[in-house]
Image (cartoon, rainbow, N blue to C red; front, side, top):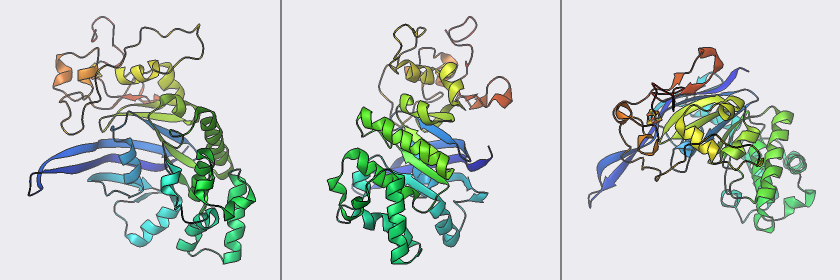
Length: 334
Ligand code: SF4
């Protein structure tokens, strides 16, 4: 498919202030040169541990944060350069689903009012038309019509996430950034919500940027996946390729950490993740992953590996490791 969203070399640096005068004493490189593409009608999964910068990427795309540098090209327009009328128009096409639907829903408003709000903000329809739209949205996400007159606290976590989804799709967006949409839900409810997202994608032709810390969740919904570590993408590939032949030791460790439902299938000596997630305040030099990498050697501590196409460049498999494809083999990094 054709690209709907292209993020190019996105950087988001936050100043760290200290002392009584709150002087600038350093900066956090929360996002440090991220590039990715979301194709029309497809899902790009963005995965990494908490603190890796994935949520910040999502928020920069929606301009909830003003990134330090980079380009966010949506439908051919750089959203970081456009003036407010174009940005307002683009905002209709770009929506977000949050991890905690309760926090993002105004608890003093009825669900009907919450779902009518986007139409009011964008001055769409008469009150009668809006309530018809609200009824249609409730049906679309599998909630009863009487939900409109009730309040968010009267619903379960899964139902509240359905309300959050209904609000996100109200204005017929093209791209929805899903920020850990099922992480706060029971496992039994997670798959219902994921199935709803997949059904809506088909019906409405939606594209998703699906952010999660859990590769197992992302696997079921993504066409392509990018793995982030300390503000950078370390590997990017079609979902099947990433699971079948991960090249980066970090991706390999994340995949090895997924419990295999088939007890007969044994993982081949996976490198396990050890050590804490290092802080983005003073990231380790060279390859950020080197303190936790079982294959690290001299060069890894000084030289930053670039994200490069692996093998034939048309396969779309990109990796940032000096020894990609040669790990654990002779002449490689083992
Ligand atoms: Fe490990 Fe070195 Fe590759 Fe980084 S560049 S992942 S430290 S082998």
